[in-house]
Image 1 (cartoon, each protein chain N blue to C red):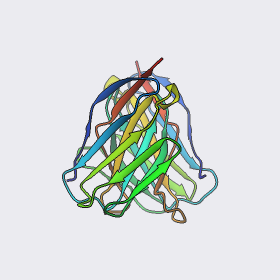
Image 2 (cartoon, each protein chain N blue to C red; image 1 turned 90 degrees about the vertical axis):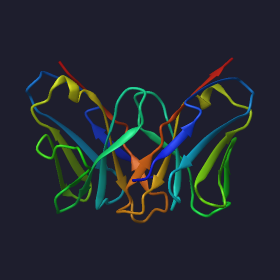
Image 3 (cartoon, chains in turn brown, purple; image 1 turned 120 degrees about the vertical axis):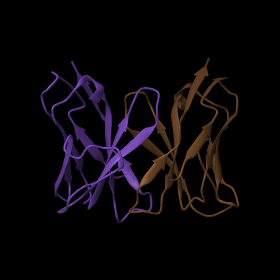
Image 4 (cartoon, rainbow over the protein chains, first blue to last red; image 1 turned 180 degrees about the horizontal axis):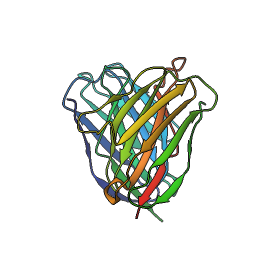
Length: 111
Length: 116
């Protein structure tokens, strides 16, 4: 089965600082999704990557998928308190649209 | 964007009773829905795939008789936790796949179940 490892597990950054979260897969990724979750709430879709070397940006968040399609990174520029939450990467397993989720990264942004 | 709702958002029940959680796709038809479970400070674990008009497909280790799934229409899937025990207390999240969307699954807001 496919496993996704995220690093770091948790992160505390000062407002205005940049940060990067990594997601490493044990197998080649068919599709990689990034979600944000606030405690006790559902998941908010951020971005989806499919092609090796692909990079997408939305507001201050940029996600990349490496050429070998086994690692993705999520980069936040000039972090704000609104960025705080749990970031989850999810991989399309290639079977019946099922997703496998990473271990999660808990982000705190201090003032 | 597509919206998925869950009801109830939270529920407290006594040990031994059954609890039903609903998952609805509000503005699209979902032939496939997924049920996940999330323990505190942990990631989402897929429990089962709910297919409209057919039996659900359960992941390894998930008890079919304990977690009953019914997908009676293209917009509704239900998860019933039967004979609930305190160890079933968790955050349950559903998602629905919109075939017309490239973005995969849309997630509900989750249901927090506490079994006393």
